[in-house]
Length: 214
Ligand SMILES: N[C@@H](CCC(=O)N[C@@H](CS)C(=O)NCC(=O)O)C(=O)O
Image (tube, rainbow, N blue to C red):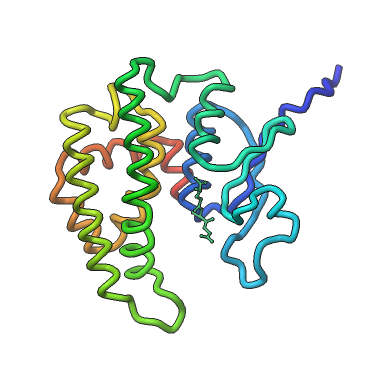
């Protein structure tokens, strides 16, 4: 018998987006199947007219589960973890959980802009017809160094960023590190942080991560 309960999961966004990738990795880790509805936030013609109703700030991704609409990646990934079966992706212990939340906030506030926009985009995909902005790259690298020092300090000798198993912080970080290390000076800077290189080598081969970054 057909059920009329709507349990469909939909992600709105583009495969190239760091934040869309984070959500796709988390869905794969939980074993949730979903539909990806293409929304190209950087399209010349702009966003589809109806997308602003889904995301008033015009960013990707947006998310929907059984008619429940949500945006902001950290809200989405926590919702996915708490709504679906599969391995828990948030530590139980209060202090590890706080560390996870701290690292995700650091990634959003101090790493995404410098590592992705200032270093990766400027070096690898500068705006059409323009040379890379070397001052922006240098500034991005300086900010990234501060972030990597702080992250190394927090992670210590753990295998994963906030505990003994991978959690939402690891999956939030992976797409950001992936782009950063594609820039030659990004790879060179990462090499100065051997514990993070070891983490990157571990995380990048997880099937969920490899598929989202492909
Ligand atoms: N705070 C948002 C950030 C999402 C975000 O910045 N997405 C990028 C793509 S990776 C975007 O839509 N950029 C378009 C723009 O900045 O206009 C979240 O957590 O979902």
